[in-house]
Structures are given as structure tokens and as C-alpha cells.
View 1 (cartoon, helix red, strand yellow):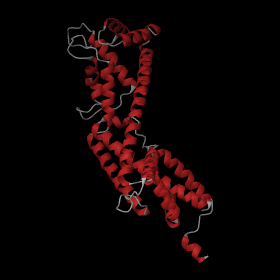
View 2 (cartoon, helix red, strand yellow):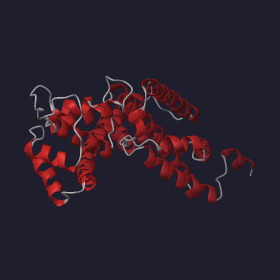
View 3 (cartoon, helix red, strand yellow):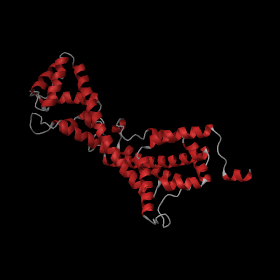
View 4 (tube, one colour):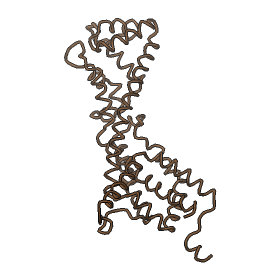
Amino acid sequence: MNGLDFLNLVIGLIFIYLIYSIAASTIWEIIVSITNLRGKTMRNWIIENFNEFTNDEKKKLSSEILDHPIIKGLSKNSHKKPIYISSELFTDVLIDLVVKSNSNDVDSSEPIVDINSFKDSLETTKSLNPGLKRVFLQYLSEDSKNLKKVKEKIGRWYDEAQERLLGSYKKSLQIWIFIISLILVSATNADTIKLASYLYGNPDAREAIANKVDIFVQDSAVESRISTMDTTIIDSIARQEQNVIIANIDENLNTLKELNKELRQTGIPIGWSVENIKLYNFWDILKKIGGLLLTVFAVSLGAPFWFDILNKLANLRSSGNKPKSSLEEKKS
């Protein structure tokens, strides 16, 4: 096997890893959309950090935050909690509620929120836990006459807290992507050792897949789809309506169908059958488990990772002389 043949073999394996990675990410996005997992993660963080009661001892500050008109306005569905709240909005809501919870106004007029009312309310409030109250009072002592700067400091605290929350979410994500990959790979018998052996012994299949990859990596729709396939990103998705979420689920299901079609067209032997389920000895069992686990770990690295590598390898292949097909070799 010459260098270009070996390159085609590697490209073929990575193409399979890429398709499985896209499938795993797509399945995860469907799960997240249906369960509103990101929204629940945000909701739980607010409950854990703002579980003090407001002055009437009937409603916790966390509930006041989640029920605030500004926060509820982020989601069209009143039953779903937003998956993302910007630091500016969160700071405005928090200060507004702290001032309101300590207002002694008996009329229906709303208390004015300024640096003085916030300072007075913060000093006497029982809505915040002592730790947060102490930190916010420190912010006030540093900028006692500038509410904007105080808001910026509270906003930075909130952003840092969200970074830690996102880190926790990523750890959970990695576990679930691994589980999804394990199920996908095991269900379809995507054994790296077996796949590499097939590609090694089938030069036409190697070249056909490599040629397919040349077209695949240049498809702008594919590149756009993969570039947005970071399942940890939390941004304007918060404003999606229910019908948009359903449309995304439908799109993801169509993606899975297309991926299945892509694999079938390559002729790669994926799937269980009477032939490939025969394991004659302990070594065969170890080899099968090892081959499946290799694929699982590879798929867990994610679609953006494999697409980037595949793109570079495809460019490397196109810059050199393409290998002859078996038909051309017979003619020569």
C-alpha cells in the first residue's frame, strides 16, 4: 500500500467517525430540545443561589426572578424556563426585586430604583443569602455613587457563575455523548478494526469514499451545519418558539436519515449479521470489543474536530496525484 492508498484509508475511517459524530450530536440536540435540559439547568442554578424568602415569607426570591415579566418574556411558552439570561437583564431584574421587596410604599406606585434605594434595600433585605449580600455591599462601597458600575460588577459575577455552570454542563454533556456514541456504535457494529480491514482490502471502496469526501467537505451546507454543532453553546436559542423547536427536531431527524443514506451508499459493512456475529475465541471477543470502543472514543471527540481534520486531509490528497483505480491499473 503506497502513501496515497494509506491516506485514502485514513480519510475513509475519519469520514465514518464524522458521520457518527454528527449523528450523536443530532440525537443529543433532540433530547435537549424535548426535555428543555438547558432551561432546567438555568432554573436549578437560580433556585440554589436565590432560595431566600421575600419579605412576605410566602414566595422565594428565586420564584420572583423566574416569574419576573422580563424573564418570562424571554420564552413564548409560559411553562418553559429560558435557557439563557444575559447579565444585563439578570442584574436589572435582581436589583428591581431587591428594591421592591424592601419597599414600604402602601400605594400602588412602583419604588424608584436608583443607587440610594438599592443601597438602603440591600442593607436591610432578607431576600438575599448573607454571602451574596456581603459581596454586593462590597460592590456598593467601592462605587457608592454610580449604579451603572455596581451593575457591571454584579454582571461580571453573574457571567463568571454562568461559566462555571457551563463547565458543569459540559461535563454532563461529555458523559451523555459517550453513552449515545456507545449505543450507536454497538447497535450498528461500527468496529474500527473491521472497517480498517475492509478498506485495506478494497482499493475501489477506499477511492470511492475519498472522492465522496472531496465533495462532502466542500458542501457549504454541511460546513454550516457542523460549525453550529457545539451543543454547549447557549445563546439566542432562548427566544425560540415551540414551532421553531419542533422544526429543528424535524430537521435533525432528516439529518439522521441522510447520514444513514450516506453510509449505505459507501458500501461499508456496517450492521450485525449472522456472518459478522460469529466470534470463535476469546481473542475474537477482545478484538471486537476493542474495535467498537475505538470507534466510540473517536466519535466522542465530536463532529467539528473530525471535520477539521478531514478537510485538511482532503486538501492534502487533492494537492497530490490521485491514486489510480483498479480499473485504470488493469488497462495500464
